[in-house]
Image 1 (cartoon, rainbow, N blue to C red):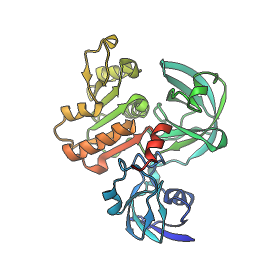
Image 2 (image 1 turned 90 degrees about the horizontal axis):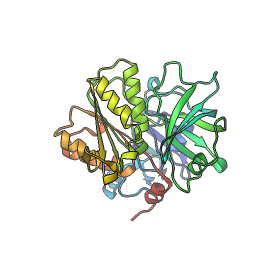
Image 3 (image 1 turned 135 degrees about the vertical axis):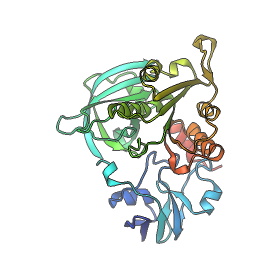
Length: 348
């Protein structure tokens, strides 16, 4: 049975059956719904059921609490309708989005940035350049419908890019990363879809921004900073980058160079598990707590956070509840591994 779905305030209408997620049906119908992880973790596709009812699906309480559900909130990537529904969610501005393309991509370069991080430069056909917003990601298409998502670490260009970088961390046992760190060679061909996600720097804002990253969450932050520099923007940017050990800050010198060369850019690296071998004299602890220590009020800021789901969720909670950050100015992308998915699909 198909149900009628209406999105407010845009007024978009589509149909969805009880076996299909609201996000999938909306995207198939051409709506411009926001989404990112598609696993119920990042909150990008969170909407509120104004009328009607839906099964919220399997979302861990860390990301969708019982009180959230009681208030009508669902993550559209997991929720399925039980009746006709009116859902409150802001759709994307068509002027700020690009069509998703399926493309062949050739591996042009492979460079170890750290023992477990690979820079992968991909090239696409000259007649099909990738146009995207700084912060968006690509999906590598594997066998049997398996997909793996990686943020684009290069700044976009108005005419699109024919070559761009990914920063890929080796996840032992990973279907793609095990291959990448062992058998993938320069000139090998991959199949990708791009661009995806709605984590990107909003060009219309002039407020100072905090760019918060953990691990390879630095990749889209790098693209954002470089896009801002290419646009000759002087919007104040403060990059906070966290890792466990010094090697996790695999482009630390680049970030320090930004801060050295540009008065409107600040950089704070933070290690949570520094050892004597790190020879570390900098900040320690959790990276989002460094932001709390430095800023008593975030009401005048935008925040862009990317990395492990636990870091992103802690930052969202503490910045909004303890530092007056408006929730609609917290933009995030969670790097969700298969282990994270297992947690996200477990209801405690």
